[in-house]
Length: 265
Ligand code: ADE
Image (cartoon, rainbow, N blue to C red; front, side, top):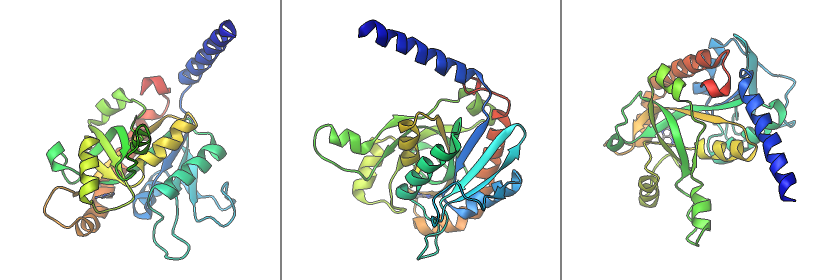
């Protein structure tokens, strides 16, 4: 079996190299909140998909269109059917990432959103951070190896030229399903060496990895988690202004990606 396996490896590597040489064509941008998504929908002049690629009845929304030479899809998990608020968090993020990859076969995923930042790691309000690594901070399983599975640490797709072009800060992201931070979360976030904290990133990364789609994470800081202001208040106060910075960075990133293949990012 070994020589055949070797041949398969060579063929697979050649196919991957071929894909990496083609310019990026289809991009899926996963954005959890409507406030974050709509300015980008307008910027790229996207239209809502009424003949949905998603199962009937789900609140997930796809906006799509052509911008420069790219097929852009902004996927927003929509509003909770009962409560009418944005479907934030890891469960919705995983589901829409899976469904979007299945339906749209993107070359690249961008998860864009707001995040809490840690001033101890150099974060300030309005910073836009390109994420180098993701991990979870609220999946505690104190059994050998399950503990690492719970943390789910992984590196993201590297885009050194894009980071340089946009002059972004680079840092690690820790993901959990709470906006606030319990003492146990705090210890895990410190162990994850995180500069930013969100509620979707590591879940998007897990699904993208599972289906072998490169994913990048652009996060803008709305609140300082290790500061003295209450998180929810600071988040809501800064959401609109910081979203403008986020959307500007995502637009510049898309402009940079246009016409380039993955290995040129
Ligand atoms: N999104 C914006 N601020 C956040 C925070 N402090 N925690 C998690 N997600 C966030």
